[in-house]
Amino acid sequence: FTINIVITNKKVHPGPKSIKLVADIIKQGGVVVFTWGKLERKSLAIMCDSGNPEACKRMNFIKKRASTQVLAINGYPELIPDVAKVENSIPLRVAARRLDVDITEALKRIMRIGAVAFIFEARDNLPEVVTVQSDGKKTVMIAGEIDDSKDYDFYTELIKALHQDQIITAGSSANRTNTGTYHLFQQEHAYSDLAPDIDLFVYHSPIPKKPLYALNLESCTCFNMTVNSNIPEVVRFG
Image (tube, rainbow, N blue to C red; front, side, top):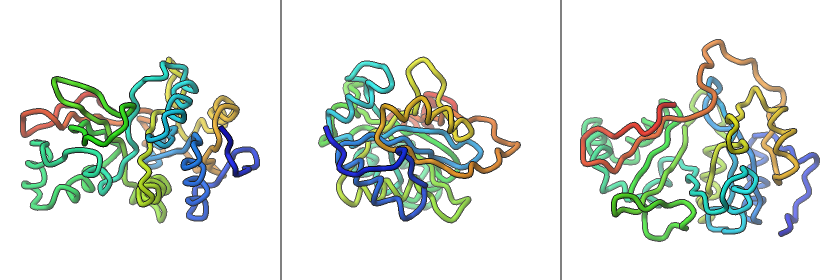
């Protein structure tokens, strides 16, 4: 395994000029740490190409867990129908109907509210590392958040760029198993811990001032959208 791009200190700034560089690292089988979400809960995550088994095993190794541990998919609204059978989700269809919008627009509105993860019935072409067999169905978890609070949403633009090149990324929280997820305001500690084992760290400099309303800096709320109900099941509160 060799990355053909040399990065000084493994740090890259989260701006438009870095998108191609980060995407190329992912395409070469690299593992990248990045931040996602609005500033009040911006946490660190780790990603690789879900279609690269060795990269996925390596990511689980970095997190100190079983190499076969199931991973989530990094998502944005337009990607979700490509990996999930959204048309089979009763809660999503009901939400779209009540909002008088299509399914993708309903997903956009939800993901603008905050950091979420959805569990949907999976499409058949997904790698095993991002799917789970549950109650006779193969499911997939997709996480994301649209950050409209600033001019440039690096996370969403990166996922879009990779999706356009037919790369679906697998992701997880950026931490070692049994430790809390790092957030933006722990960036230095996270870099010291994870940099030796990864290929690239999307590094914010300077770090913005922490908002007084920053309350939850770790998890996202997870909804099971496969239930036979108008209301999704909350699997985890974030």
